[in-house]
Image (cartoon, rainbow, N blue to C red; front, side, top):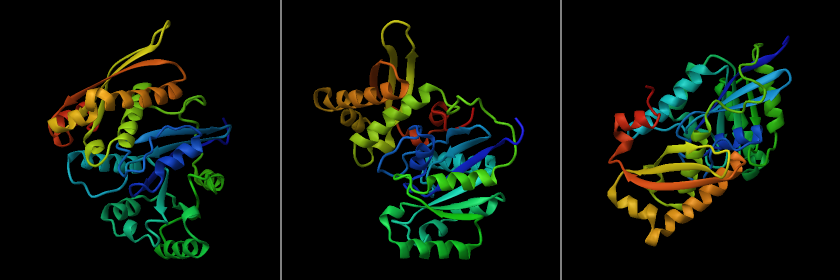
Length: 301
């Protein structure tokens, strides 16, 4: 199609700045899981926004951090790879927790990513519903002084304020290119990926402290049935023997509650009934084990 614009837009920022909320808001579909806890997103999540003459491929990424173990190193690699793939870079800042951008710009990895990328960079000031006009104006001034950004825009991703205006800015900077994906495609990930993410989201919501960060979800079986409910069997992998009874709970109460919440959300996402089977396995120190991380998709095979 003539005059079609299409490109990759990578969203980066510190943990919990609202990257996933922004992408979900634009797409009108919950592709990236969201919880109040930081570091919920572990992999790159691709979401496709289509209009007649535009296609924007968003790459939601994990929060920028200083890695403490191998899993976090791989999460950081996902960010760098996504920036390499980008035509446009969005840096999200949380004006509520980082009112002058100091946490972001004092982060060595954030600076490396910004300086490495030579295409259009848009600074997106998020959560302005939690700030006043003077705070927003001050952060805009700070960002202008950096002389790094093609555009600076304040938004509220959760309230969808100025999100349409952000979309217009992105379209202005998109390169002319045929669409990469069919118009009816929303992501490049299979249903199994989103099912595992939903289960992991419910674990983040239900359990406290270190347990959610020590958990991975592996889909062992996924059978679509023409008659009856689809069958899904998932393993909840924990790092230590002491974490297994926490997930299961007294008389299995905790895992039953988890299964109910996860199944309801999975059925909403898939738009069909499912039977969900959950089991708990212990894989000691899986977050620092290259072979297990490879099996879980954090290391390219």
